[in-house]
Image (cartoon, rainbow, N blue to C red; front, side, top):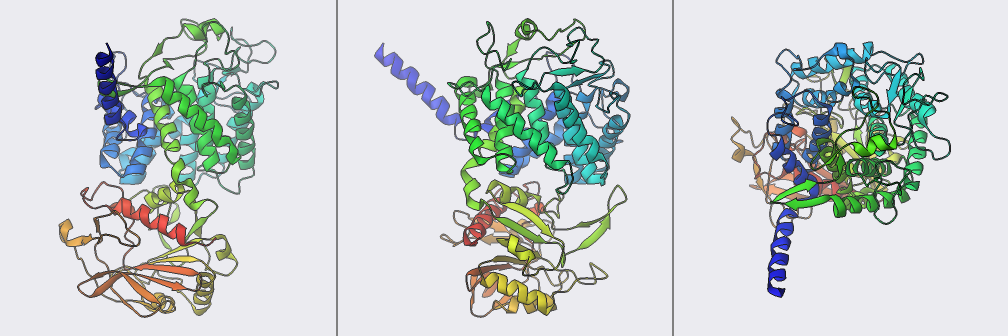
Length: 633
């Protein structure tokens, strides 16, 4: 018997050890890729345009950001392309149903458009935006959950509609839309929040005519954990796009704080989990629910990371996540599975769902429900960021938006600044580096004005990439003596500056070199590594063992780079055939890192173009961590 137990133990240990080679987020994405390879079909029925898919794919997006592994992006695109036609039409979508659930996948339409620039994805997003323009509303202005659910707002609907609405409004510069977006949350809380517990009821019926509606308040009878999870995720995701100076931004943050206070009170203390009906843990049949617990962990962890709620609240998320992994994650037949997710719960409809406790307990609890899988991936992505958050806590990395200020007309007819910016997802953007900054606990910002002593105070690190010349900008802002003085003094006092030039055809050298000279650096008007027809080996940079920045990295890729001449105090960080390719300079308490190419723009970081042997993503993270370590503030 003892030998049998030992054999079983080692078999189980081997299975778990094998599974644990990858983070749980990636393991669960693999489960999704096993279950839904090319489209999204449930219960043996034909594939349909379903919000469940969007929950999973937003999680997959996070895993792509955290790995730069192209298989994850390709998976998102493959599933979405099953539904989106070349003309932007959406298979199985009907606007006239005015079902707000159908809007959720619009977030992936915007992702694909912003990354690839393909018009069909924007056209699909435009269809969903038009639905919101015409969506039936309460007298106050709240979106109906569906056309057939007259006068009803559900917590679920805030997740389905508002994050897409906010990203679209931000992208299209529909500034007035943010009042509408904020009001959806404000009205929902005003009508559905219970004053005693702070929890929000699943739904609210303005007409108070539904069988499930309280005849005085219009609220449904119970606090469904999953619905609270939807609402929380919606809040933290909408804030990603909400203007910093908008008068109602603080109202959303206040709602989020009240929300977290309420859900913390009903967290099961022994397990860290949340029950399906939040405030009735001892009621017969009530159970701890995986998807809601995952959504609430995600909400809290992201809210802490973004600084919306007190940092101490991360203990709630940690306890919750540990409970999820312990009780719901099981490796079975080599696959990581999520147990404990309720398949569905709603209000009204046919057969009628009365919102009673007994109703919720009758809904089936299943393994690998897609909503649960998606929620767990989201939670895992956030929790897997925790170990690196201390690297940049309290620090800001500024990016110049004054000397490099190329403009263009976007698809909405707006004139926008572009090229090497934090929020650009296309090839020329720095969105992957932006993610790595956030992963390492710092924040990013753009500096629209020329650098001065005052506006540099907020920065620990300052990126100055590829200043404009007349070829790129008819009226470029040149680096002048006063700017050089401000930047030199700031570095000397402890600032860290990144200078990324470009080849001789693509950067303004004269004024840029006047600044660089203060640190013993000169960018040469030449070009090396002119890669022809994607012969990637022509852009290879082998990294020697023990490199001061790029430790444990074997090879990176840089094309069309200019060389440098350096004098003290600058020192070389990479030399090829006697020519300096990267350098560093220490002046006073500060540091300058210089390279003759923008290097870490998305095209050569996001995994979609370079062969896996080139470790640009790892190098980008290594540089961010090194820069944050040098920063004294």
